[in-house]
Length: 132
Length: 262
Image (spheres, rainbow over the protein chains, first blue to last red):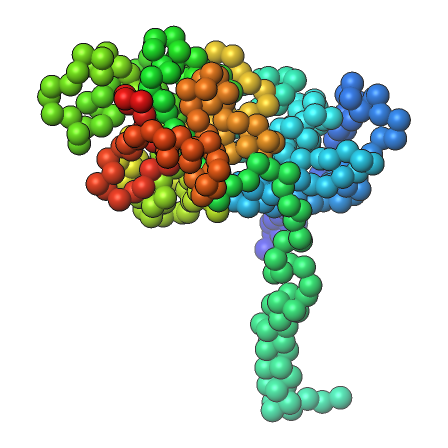
């Protein structure tokens, strides 16, 4: 086979091209996503805390919102509980968005980055931004 | 170590079985996941055994007087104003006598009634046909008698609209948002493809407020607990002659009408 070396060479090139997306993703450092937490309400808080620990919110907010939805709509249980004497309601629009009034910089950035499409905003209204 | 065929098959079988049964079994017995959701606190709610309303037609002398109620509802609940009648969304609206009470219309009504427009809304029936036909349980009757919609579950099949004898339900044929003039940012809108209707302001009741239309009615709409003998609804029903819409259907509406007399 006189073309053995030529075939081998082209085969290597072919493999490199085919696997290039995977290699690229292994080598590059992901750009990451920066979620903006500064809103007027949060900036005015002396102790900056959410109703649940940050880690739990990052990982479970979707499950929490789903269980809130069922509690409120189907069970009419609307109270989340008191924190420092303040009663919080189980409400995306009234509770979450009260502090996180920057939906496009808070919710959307991460969802866009993770390519997650949520249908919350088909009905629920981002209070301050009012982007319909 | 050498493994013979028999040992190999045994080991493979055991591993396979563990793989199939192991993780689901662990999941079933793990705490949390399948248990009922954690204990929920009692609401501060205005609660009742069965919410009901009385519409006092004498207290609605002019178009303006009942339009105030309709507007209050429309503004609070982000009801779109769509010109096309086929697409319109209604929670509470006004109908002529013959349309509100077609079963008792005999063709010759008194002049005063001929002029009247009757406020109609979801009757929040005791025996709601819409709930029976909903294939996803998106609409259901709560313990306090209010028939509510879970828009998250609605698939837009419109069986409930066919079942409702009062036409109290509207379907969102199109995205309602462009048709909402003044958005109330503390209430959601609906989306294309779901059915909606009046919910007796379930969220306002929870906060201890009266329904929006009742608040705007200046006493013409009376709201209270039908099962409480001392409620103002029961007091009104005791002292005045009232009718309901299409009583022969056995839905037992929760909205009563005082039409005339004293």
